[in-house]
Image 1: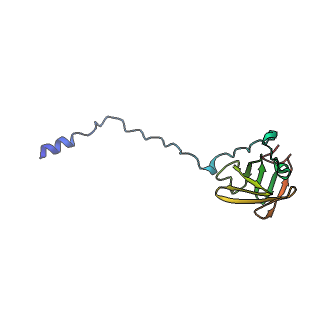
Image 2: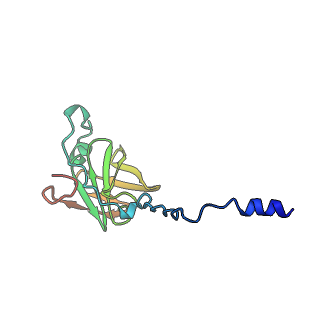
Image 3: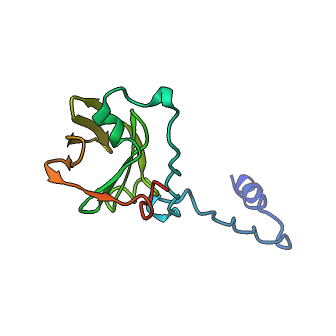
Length: 143
């Protein structure tokens, strides 16, 4: 039995070997809130074939609206780009989502929340609140 203990005890590494080098810890993927904000997509008018047939809907395309801290730019007949302080931590630069338009009623989802809008051809309400038109020169998602 004593021989077995000596054999096991003698199996250690030689004392003159270098100590193991600690591994450098790499930082994992950054959290969405740590990423740099991406610039919003540059607005380019859609081709005539992608413009909506409804004249009121047509006037909405290419406009940007703000209500509180939420900003919505209607890129074309089916897509809206939305930015805001509640969205930035999850999607720096905002989110482009699909929307539906039917008789002045607009609906889309952002981060699992339903957004309902009403458009009469000149004024827009977002979730029941009057939205303010953002001039195209200062709009962040439109030129």
